Length: 112
Image 1 (cartoon, rainbow, N blue to C red):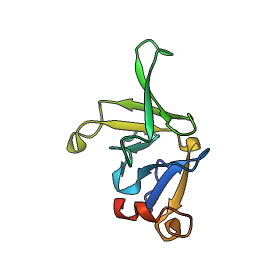
Image 2 (tube, rainbow, N blue to C red):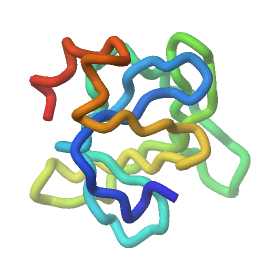
Image 3 (cartoon, helix red, strand yellow):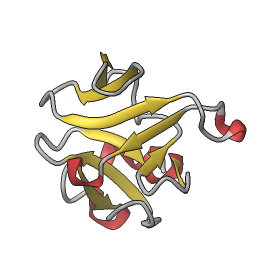
Image 4 (tube, one colour):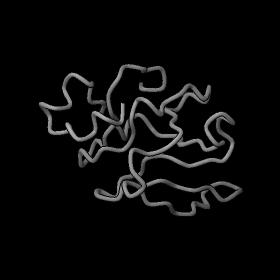
């Protein structure tokens, strides 16, 4: 749903409304997942080791609601440090730039 979405704004946790990512850090990783180079802040996610496949992965959970968001990989764009935050669109809600102040996200306008 959001993998091909490039409007200016922020992506928030669908459960808690916690800001997670800026559209400024979104890119097309060609994975079919919403992909970002970094979170909006260092403290919005918790990383856990996930052993559900044959190899360990880094699971990402929101720090407020403890929602499963996706996974962190080290095979992202070299231009942005090689980090790839692969996020499930169903875990996100998009807040457009022109709605951010009205919805209480004014402090994140500088992230765009």
